Image (cartoon, rainbow, N blue to C red; front, side, top):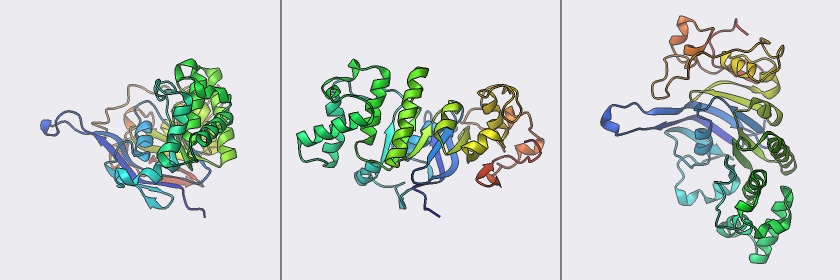
Length: 323
């Protein structure tokens, strides 16, 4: 069995609001999350806004510090590496951000944006060589070489995101963390960028954590899907299995909002009542129980563990009689 490229073990991230002595509870943005990503695998991470998707991505990138748990990359524990020791790790793990304008420095030309990683990591034999490498990156993402001399404001949103993708590929990474990489674009541009990401992933042999709220895009791009709710994993499965037969009530409700009538587990739209609870004061037991139409009194007891119910499919639900 191939060793995972990324191994997330019991990851938790808490944020404190106000003074620690004020009596306020910490916000449990991510609570005991574990998963792996194999080499060349695309894993989709889905859930409502506030479910902890972006926080997980930022913790993997070490842009924020986890409260607990371990981040193992290519067999090395990078959880507690000091900033000066993170340089080799960050060369192998690169982000694609949601905002294709805010993530690019408006004062820098595209050439400066794309060659900056080469300068930082000592790649290339000088300015000419680095410029040629930058031009090749533009070709990879479907932009002309003369774009090097222009500034971000001179491009459309889709073109700016292509530049962001080119920057993520500059250091030949093994893993891409794509955080809502197309949500700021209109539908036609979304399709173009998703197709580009799919082509690059296959041709370059990349692994990818694809964070999104659009379940249709996740199904198209992902090999495996992880469903989050209030910072906890509700279900994980191969994309085909999860979309064909969800085994957690939250996944069922999410899919019912995007699938065509007559498809999916129930063939009808499931409306979740109320808003998600506060991550500073989550419900006891199953965190989804306050909005679950299948909830029993026992659901308020212990936190249900993620248990395997089929090959490659696991759910954090105590009931086996509802799906």
